[in-house]
Amino acid sequence: MRNVLLGILLVMASLAALSGEVLFFYGAGCPHCTEVRSFLVDLQNQGLSFELKTYEIHSPENWQLLLRLLSVYGAEVGPVPMVFVGNVAMVSDTFYGLGPAPTKYFGLAQQMVLEEVIRQALAENAPSPLSRLPQTATTAILFLPAEETPEVSNYKSVVEKLLSEFPELGVQVLDPTTPEGRDRFEKLLRLYGARGEPPALFVGDLALLGGNLYLPRHKPIPYPSPEGDQILKENVARAVANRAASPLDRLALREKLTLGAVVGGAALDSINPCDFAVLVLLLGTLLVVGKRTKVIWAGLAFAAGVFVTYYLTGFVLYSILGITVGTRTFRVPFIYAVSSLAILVGLWEMKDLLWYGKGVSIEVPERWKPLVKKFTSRVVSVPGAFVAGLIDALFLAPCTSGPYLVILTLLSQTTTRTQGALWLLLYNFIFILPMIAIALLVHFGVTTTARAERWRQAKLGWLHFATGLVMVALGVGMIVGTTLGYL
Figure 1 (tube, rainbow, N blue to C red):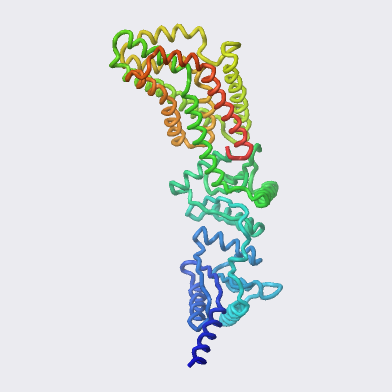
Figure 2 (tube, rainbow, N blue to C red):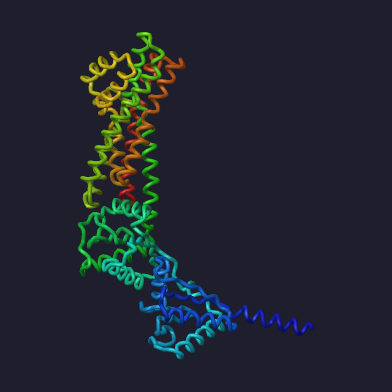
């Protein structure tokens, strides 16, 4: 009895040892594929212990995997079915890996050779064909519409050639007709400073679409062309060698940087001495004429007026920048120029911490102050406070527009129109929060307008310093982000 059990265990162990993977690529409706698949299943039923993994080639992920496998096996693209096992690849009727040259077998001979290849792979305990794939060094993003057109076929051929030459190149295929795919496509267009419609390929610092190659600080290069072919291969080789971040990874980091810049910039920009001065004057006027109950509503109305003016002017400027700063050839120098100006203005603002009042300060011009004060001191109603916010925001532009212009430049180059509108809503909401806080504190008697004004006067240097600091940080961040290719 012991001998019988021992024999069974030995047989089971030997069968377990003879196990492996066979990769089978097929096309829907292909009769030859059905025939080969049935043959492979029959081999399993006869006792050959291998895992049969099947892949339908019209799936973008499967198509990309197939191209990489063909590359590492040294096989050419051909019709399905395709089988990969051990060191051998079968492409339709052609076997690669049996000898120094590809060999063709048909019918029964093909089945016999395929069975022998599988048995030999199992006997040698050959690893999965997937283990032959090199680790992906970088990933290209390919936008392909579902409809098969000559242009789509051309882009597939381009990718096939690239994968045959660069096995470490990964490809992620996206459908640009879906909402998510379209959103990512439009964002990548802005990131790469490219123009056109899908199909499109993004890899490393290069974008290919609309019959042109787009590179940083270069004019569009016609493709296909001898020069374009060479530049495409050189840039893909560089992206693989440098293990460049995927375009989508760059996009994700860019969005995080944009969120941080918007929130941080708005928070520091909101601590603005000019807005505080006008709001304190307005609330003080209401208290003097005995309208304390209207303080909170007037404060909210004033903040709403500032919000509306800033949002509308910001959206107009954002739209103009998005249209005029087009290709990457012009966009990069423009961002460098705006960023450098932001750093210089920020440093000038920061000097007010030590030398406020000496030299020119970035605030409301002196000749405007009496007019602003005169207009604001006459406001005694909630609608009037709203109008005061609308108008005073225009007068306060020299004092408050510095960080805002930098953020508008950033958003115009990193967001779609809808996203830009939402980012501006967030920025301006954060911007008016301190105004709302002051109105609430005065209304509930936590502070008085006199104390608020004394605090503002005492902290003028620090407030200018904070505004300057955020401008310097934004300017440096935009220069670094643009240099690294994230903006």
